[in-house]
Length: 445
Ligand code: ADP
Image (tube, rainbow, N blue to C red; front, side, top):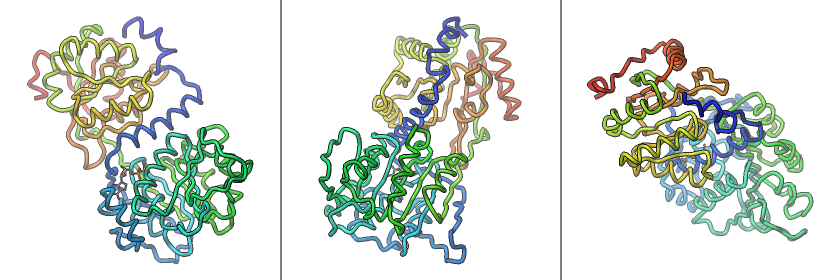
């Protein structure tokens, strides 16, 4: 590692993070994944369903027609390009649309169709003839609320009688002016204000309550209490729905407080594996040496799309500059960029406009760019104490289930220490990492 890197450690994005920053990251990751995702995530795992009443029949649907949706909603669904329900929707939709309404806690990784499901449920339960809020959805951040709002608008495109209001910061309202929109989406603080202080919403008239991204929600100071206060104002028969991408104990405890007598649906994340990845290492002496090695294999790696991971922003910037000087067109994803800029970079890369994406670990964490088949660890992944980080190594280069294409990973090793770390990865995953001679590339071609 270059000398400067050690000094950078505390201030760079790989340095220690306060809890608050960590939390903000989760919201950012979630938003980025929404912005870049064009398709529902495939998953081969079985959906686990736990019914509140185990004796009632378990319904699942394979088509949207079976749900007997209002024609204008079915049209909206098809207009969005959905042909059939996603895995989680097969079970969740019949439950959410059942009469009498049923409560639901659903967990599955981001991109599996949760938002689309509850949006459809809200739109189905609204009575457009009644001019007051009937569905209330809370999201952890302003940006996430807007994203969900967009889905409501898209899916309700052919149902213009149903209107949507945004209870988010900046949307100033006067006290006592009753809201006529049937669906309200917002962040917990503003929603609480609208219900209690400003009395714009009568919580007693809410029929469907949705709490989205519960894991991100509880990571933000105060949101948990605000959510519970909102929930307590709702009438007894109100349908409560809670969604989360992950399910730690804390999320679970929160979910049980917010959703009484729930049905529970879980879809496990597809496991990542190194089985379909060819792993190599290249021996180098310095950062410059690594750069030269990278140039030697550049032709071979850019047959496909490649992602290059660096430990610090500084290295990532330097490398992007060097490669550009060589005339290569590369994209750089950096922690300095605002979310929209990052999303734009990822989107261009996803669309194949750039073949190489350089990034730091923190910046790319939690983002799935599925078609990447070459990963270069310009620096090996390390945890914040500088020790091997098996989970990150796997997440960087691993592929999920049978959807994974074959992949190639090249690790740049430039010191005794990094060699030791490489050996730890080799042992941990029990998969050989072969030496690559960058002057003789027959191996990888
Ligand atoms: P989640 O809320 O679990 O993150 P979303 O509902 O946002 O997932 O769905 C992820 C992506 O998949 C979105 O682009 C959405 O439009 C799309 N999508 C959702 N359901 C379907 C479906 N049944 N068929 C095709 N695409 C879908």
